[in-house]
Image (cartoon, rainbow, N blue to C red; front, side, top):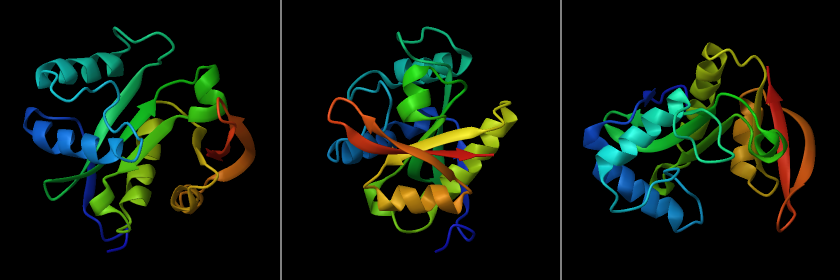
Length: 174
């Protein structure tokens, strides 16, 4: 399935998403990636939903965090990924993290979902008033490089992400 065929929709988290979300979080944690930002398996789901809602409103943000919108990527009722759209950039996000962080659940990869998630995330960012969107990825993540470039990303530079000095690509999308 190509991304243009994928009936993928970004949407807010729901009370009915707890099990699928937890499974996605565990699958990506096994790869060293945090699917649910600030989510801890076993935490009351309603608390997590409140945290996500607060973050979108800029309330009760952890130190060094900015207002952000977390949306799930849904294909016909199946959770295939997520996106986090940061409404502004602090120093860390400007240098390493960007406006958009996205992920695809491992068993849903290579179906065009990453590109669909990023394209729709860019639209959300533009609707939030972000004209130029910064998206970053590890230099070694060829899938993300291709995804970002397919969405119009223009490479600005490659920087060293501390503490391991991992090469990180910084792309701007207009």
